[in-house]
Image 1: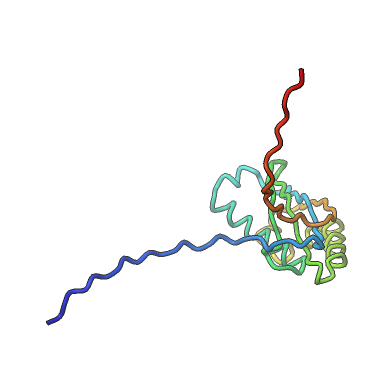
Image 2: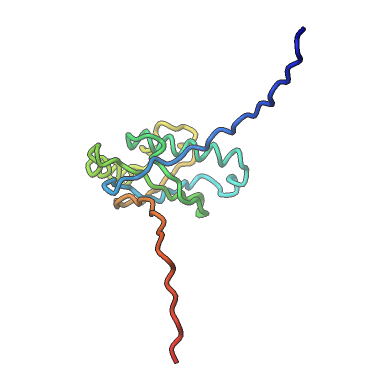
Length: 154
C-alpha cells in the first residue's frame, strides 16, 4: 500500500532591494547637485518614469566615476527643472582621493560628458552641475548607554 503524501506549501522570498556598499572612514565622497534643465519636474510623478530616470542616473554616474552602482546614492530629487543631489563614494583602497578629484573635475567642467553613456539623460540638456569632495559618511553604531535625564533646579 502507498500512503498519501501532503505537499508542503512553497513560499517565494521577495528579492532584496539593492543596498549601499558599507562606507569606510577612509572613503572619499563627491557630493553634487546636477540640474537637468530640459526635464520638467512633473514627469517624475509617473513612478515608472522616475524609476527609469533613477536607474539611468546611477548607471551613468557609476560609469563616469569608475565605481560600482552601489557606490552611487541619490539623496534627493527636487524641483528647479529637475535637480538631483547625489553622492559617489570612492574606496580608500582604490586611490579614493585621486579618483574623487578626477571625477569632480569632470563633473564641474563638463557635466554633459558625465552622461555621455546615457542617451536617455542627454535628451534633457543643458545639464548643469556643482560638486565638492568630502569624506564619506559611515553608519553610526547604536549606543547602549542609558539615556541622560536632567532634573529641574529650583
